[in-house]
Image (cartoon, rainbow, N blue to C red; front, side, top):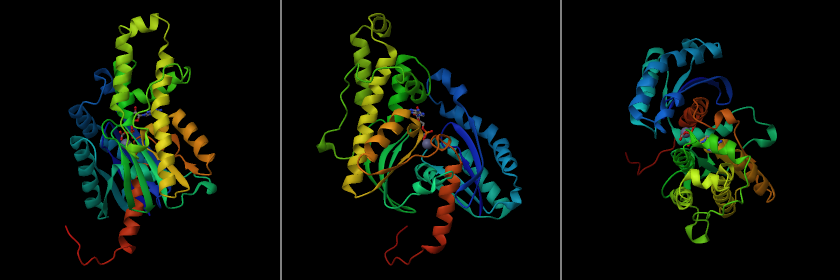
Length: 339
Ligand code: KG4
Ligand code: ZN
């Protein structure tokens, strides 16, 4: 089955063609970062206008790179949410038009479900094939959750952030330090040169009583207070504190909490596998630390290739494939079904 997928939930216009939910024939992404950079964040109206301008050439490019005609496509999958509504409308409208034109099924995919499914795309070494149940640490710019994945389409959110998402904290700290947007990759790079123990930021909500929930807004405030107490960034850095140490210390606090809670979730729910998903799963420290600490406990860590961590349409095609095959075979009568 050849699935054409479209993703426009945020600031990436993306289209992909994937065979049988696994083999990526094309994965085209047009990032709008350059346009939003100067504002230090995404401007929703600009995002939707850019999606409208870019969507058709991106879909064509995805078909061309895959070597497929529209007539060879078996289904059209599209992200229907969560995301910026003006951006989502562009992708959903394009997908509806295409599915209608080729008379093939239209499959709506939840963006977060898409991120989880990035783990099912090739190339995956055979030893790393995911087995259910597993814990998925879903960390993106808009969400931070721990999801218990029992089977295809069978998820339970067992922990979530009570305020900011992890990626949002990265972006806000970077904006405050005026080091660029998006903050995640910039802080990640700087942190590699720094000492993660230089500044001891409190690990938010790591205590037992908070269970599997997260909080990152206090950590962002802790960074802001630390800088302000020193009289601003200029005073702080001329006084000997290095930007790279500040970044490494902030990152260490984020990563410690994410890793600790993922391990706790795996233990509580008797899972032998933890999968990573979402833009923050591109973070080098998170990938390394989770792998080291989980493997020391005999837990397998599954991490998608970098290109499938941040927003892309291949993951949407993969989720769409499983949705379509499951919708045919797992349909069961439910006497008390509701709408
Ligand atoms: O999943 P994604 O592409 O979009 C959303 O669904 O939100 O995630 C984007 C987020 C941004 O907050 C960005 O700063 C963060 O992922 N991010 C990273 C890294 N690469 C992207 N955060 C930490 N380290 C990275 N290397
Ligand atoms: Zn995302």
